[in-house]
Image (spheres, helix red, strand yellow):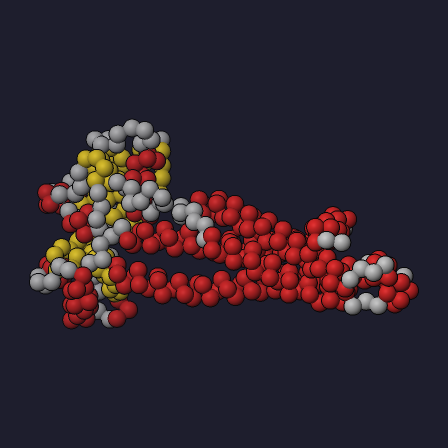
Length: 386
């Protein structure tokens, strides 16, 4: 009997026990799919976040304000006086209903100035961005993020049209380019207006965030410390503000990758270990049921290694099929989830191949014991079994 015949017999046994084989394959598939789903969704989300941060300059610093102490224009001017700062831009934010004709949508509103686009590397698709005169005269004008423009004005030019925010009309003067074509950024779903207009018309008096552009990447740390020192001198406590840089955020995300990889490894090991136990149980049951058959084959001169290989092939085949099916479930199952999150679809092929390989490895490890048991059966004992 050659290897091809042994494989053929092994496949025949799997086919003959459809339900048992299906349940075992299902267990492996679930284990593999859970790993692929977790990794694909995690990596897709992380890639989108990376792109969001990488689209902005590494010399960008964000200062978020939380406490009771208010930040005003005098603070902006005081911070801007630092020789290591190129540009500074205030932010006032809110979320409210925006209306155009019969379309209503809840959108983020950001009040800012002309420096925002420069600091955050935002490009204008059409029209213009906010200018100093817009803040000086508190004009009722807005610039739409790309997603907002596409939702409210699909296929048409939004420039010059009017939308209502809290029942107040605002003229659209510009539309921003999409930050990245491969995913939806929250900033693409935002409406921008002069911050003094936001303060006066919308009643959003408090500056909630300050965008700072350092003169160079080498000065980022010094500028961050200077901003923190200004807030502390103003009497703000440490939990009243949070100052971070774009570079710091990217580095932090990269350090998280190692932790995520460890989590993936742990989930994969546990999931496939449990599935491997299922393989062993199925193969042990198979050995028990086929004891007489094994005895007849050994009595007719079938070598021990042939029986060992046959049971190992059965175990390997089941684990391989389970790994492939689980990978497909994980890949295709992650697509709608990532799409609903607005994240980029990303397949970590190394993880897919590793998961299938590990599933097969588990098939070998947990298939050895039953295969060895079958190959060591004595013909006389096996033939007496019922």
